[in-house]
Amino acid sequence: MEAPKFDGNLYPESYLDWVQAIQRIYELNDYDDETTFKLATLKLKRYASLWYENLKKNRAREAKSKIKTLSKFEKHMDKIF
Image (tube, rainbow, N blue to C red; front, side, top):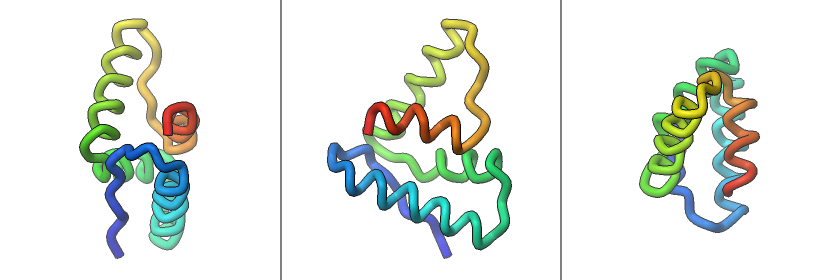
């Protein structure tokens, strides 16, 4: 089973559906939070992908730690999407 892609549209329902699908799929495969995060970021496209790249650059510029888990990533995504 493959995870759906997320393009960052402005419909909150789309984001919530994507997060739930990611969580369910990776629970079935028994992945840890860090692995799930890495795989989820591969499913970002269009605006969501650009947003994530910008987030990484801003965190590096501000000397903040890298995001390494899905739970921390979701906190940032919740603010935007």
